[in-house]
Image (cartoon, rainbow, N blue to C red):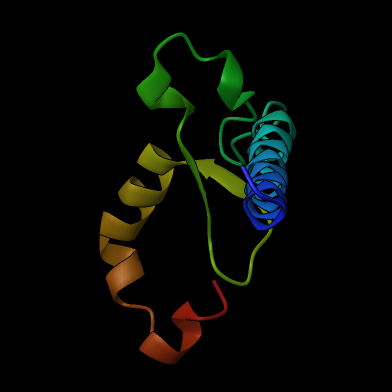
Length: 88
């Protein structure tokens, strides 16, 4: 391996390590996420599919994906003017 290959290899390893660290941080920061409806810690749910959550645009609250889907399928949601949906 010549110097250029070694430099490229080191650069690739550093980039891979950065991505791994970002993923690790994302997982760690989502461990205490609560559903804004049920106030349950999502990572404590027994079934992995029930640990999925979403964050609505222009809002920092987290919700079970099932809660978001149920709310968005409700009749009242469809009566909201489209320009207001950006603020919900």
